[in-house]
Length: 287
Image 1 (cartoon, rainbow, N blue to C red):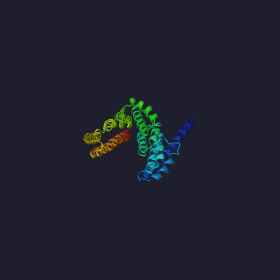
Image 2: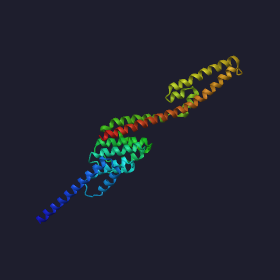
Image 3: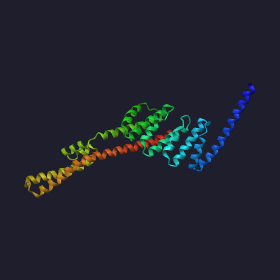
């Protein structure tokens, strides 16, 4: 019985050694493909290697990571993200693959896909959990997914580690966007109807408001003075009152447009800053 067990152990060891040697040779060839940027050939080679059911988890992670990179270089985004997503969280490649997949989706403007991808990401510690919650909230904002944003933003209070600084900036940008969204074009128009330029001040453009107020005030005073001296038939009154009407109505309409323009400008700026921070956080995460 002992002899049989000994033979079985020796046989298994020989098989394992042969498989290990085979993988080393295949790995050397894959290194050749990878280093020489033969990405299409690499995709075929890595796919073939991944069919081997005897590979260790670390070996499979390495192959999936390289497969994801080759797909990325060939501009095959979905396949790249899928391959990167297969990398387990037990090795250092996990951080790099997560960051690479997320960065591709962000650059492609696929914020919903990025948000959904994060649902399958399994953080292994509080630091990684903090990054995941920050990314989920930021991508929900970029995707205009109000339901997910409401749910994910609650978890920001539990963020720890390296994502805290990014989280604080995200809150600031979201508050700025929320504040400007509350401003009403109709209210701005109404304020400017009462006091020319006041709607533009309300929109956050005090200099524009002053520029709208001054011509209306000057023309209004001139029209009133001309009417006092010569009545409504006075040519100066007709000219000044006509110009006043043009500036006054234009000021009302312009105030409503100013609110819309400031709103779009502020939200777009917030989105740009949030996306830039997302990319920075991904690179910090993968270091």
